[in-house]
Amino acid sequence: MERLRSITWEKLSYGRAIPIVAWNLLRHLVRERRFLLSAVYFVLLPIYLISNSVLTAVQTGSGIALFYAHRNISFYIRTFYLSFFLGQILVVVLSADQLAGEIEQDTYALLRSKPVHDSEIVIGKFLGLVGVVSLLDLPGYLFIYFYSLVRYEAEASAYIGTVDEIIGGFLLLLLLHSIIIAFTLLFSSLFSKNLYSILSSLIFIFILSIVTDLIQGTNTDIVDNYLSIDWLAQAILPSVLYHVDPLESAPNVPLIILGILGAITGFLGLTTLVMRNKEIF
Image (cartoon, rainbow, N blue to C red; front, side, top):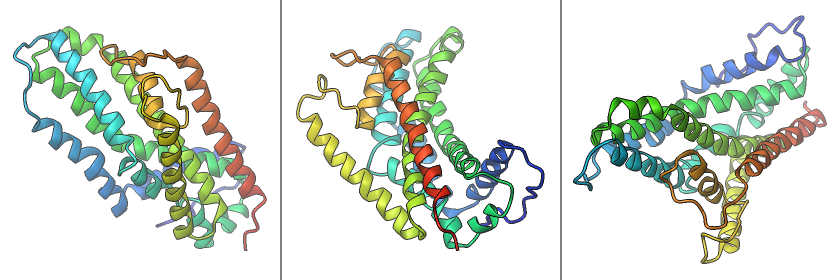
């Protein structure tokens, strides 16, 4: 991967390096094979599956169309985009080498010789990865939603009147992917080899998935399982897509979102602290 050698850093005030780091990461990562592999899973496969699904309703109209649009989006977010099987793994593969790779290729030391703070590099990497993931999430997400509206012959008002729901659902998906990116960057900062960073991140989400399954038990509607990304999606989605069944325990959605943002901020803060105190040779 091309790194950040060619960037002119002189006379940059704090914060101005963040978009440079983010854009450089985005520009180079979208050319790599792992991005293309991820695009097959996040973009092409959902489009293929939803376009070849069986028509199950006899009735058509805006109400039916919105019902299936919300249900389909909820299903794909929970079982496809955020699934441990490949959804989370591919996000880890895209993210895990972003700091460890800089160290392994001896380019982080070059960055440190410039007037750039460690926090700018970490935030820039995070925002760049969020941009990459948004490019992967958005096409399939929009196709699933609008295909449902077209398939069930929704009126024009259904397209215009649900813009806030479309945006809200996508931002939720991106927010939950951002948690994975943030903790993967933390693991990337702990190691100086790409392989160790990727393996440790995958082991972590595997253990977390086992722990959340044990916490969840058999009652998936009542147990508040804040460690489970799937549960977080179940808890927040009904507040955005009103045709999705809410959990019986009715969690405080604004508090959950604040908690997610706090967790992301904490992961990025710890990553910056690790990188600041890391010996780079």
